[in-house]
Image 1: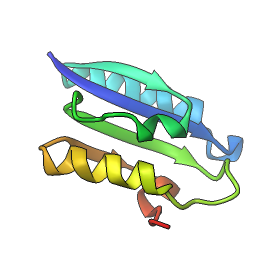
Image 2: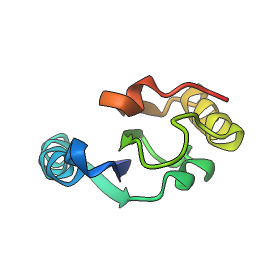
Image 3: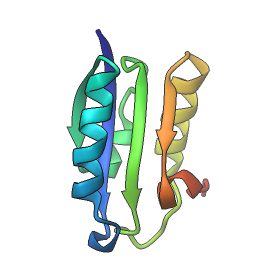
Length: 96
């Protein structure tokens, strides 16, 4: 079984809970066991234990930039083969 971290939430106008319901079904059909979180600071954790990190978080903090710890964690995970999928605003997030 593959493991995914799914971060979703943020500005209600982007309908993060409706999108999450759609994504749940999609991830399940792809045989992922999904850990869902609504705390963007979880990206500071060790992400290398996942096969995929899904980013669906937009516009709920004062900035759309990743913290240095979030960026470092994501880059480390990707360098070790973890996939990253994002959409809408989160896919456009830049580093500090």
